[in-house]
Image 1 (spheres, helix red, strand yellow):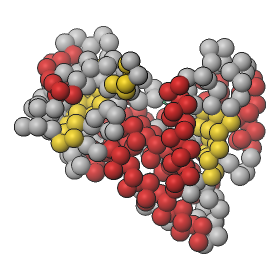
Image 2 (cartoon, rainbow, N blue to C red; image 1 turned 180 degrees about the horizontal axis):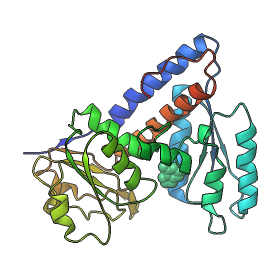
Image 3 (cartoon, protein in one colour; image 1 turned 120 degrees about the horizontal axis):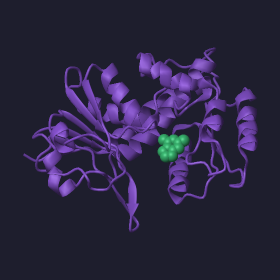
Image 4 (cartoon, rainbow, N blue to C red; image 1 turned 60 degrees about the horizontal axis):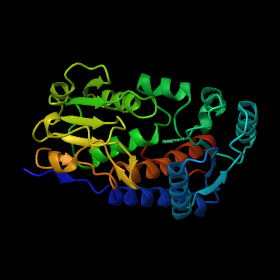
Length: 292
Ligand code: GUN
């Protein structure tokens, strides 16, 4: 057996087309296009690349996108004030604070300043709570992209055994909640899990979100399992996932590659979340959306 290799770029392009269609329908009816503001306050090359992708995607689908770049010496108070201004601006639908923030900044305070109704990343504790309750308004983009890839490849989720390796607030935990909400039986593993390969081998769906390049090899994979690689670590200028593709590909049933798997989906889901928030905030004249 050799795994089906998921083409995340193609799936993402399909989602972008759906998003663009909804925005076009709204614009034709006189509804103003959604506006997304990104706050980029770091000098991390990965963040710059990611924000560049976001801006280009926004342009493709018809979202009014814009990036603010406060100085990396900014204080917590200055960033909270900036976010407060965007929160109060009725013409801003969606706010994204790019992470990481500089060391001197209290990240939790800045993220908490984003009102839940404009929290396009779904990082606000209120939105995380809604996700945990099984009734999310917006879902963090990368986890949402992972689930969408599984759904669009007809991977059965209800009743499946799912194992998530990694418990970060941005990726591991929300993916586990999404799988649970979709009726999978979910195990979350982390650095203290005993006999990690054996736990992973129980998985029909294995999600690798550790940030440790190549740590998941064939010894972690049940034959035929769907393997979702969320890792994106830059190694010698190349993007590497958590999964050792050459080892896993002959064993898995489905595999999302790095690059070209989950990455493009993150951007597409950001576009979709932006429209979701704009429609919820400004329902008058809004186009119909069916993906929420
Ligand atoms: N930095 C790395 N991933 C992300 C993400 O999904 N959202 C934000 N805001 N920052 C990030």
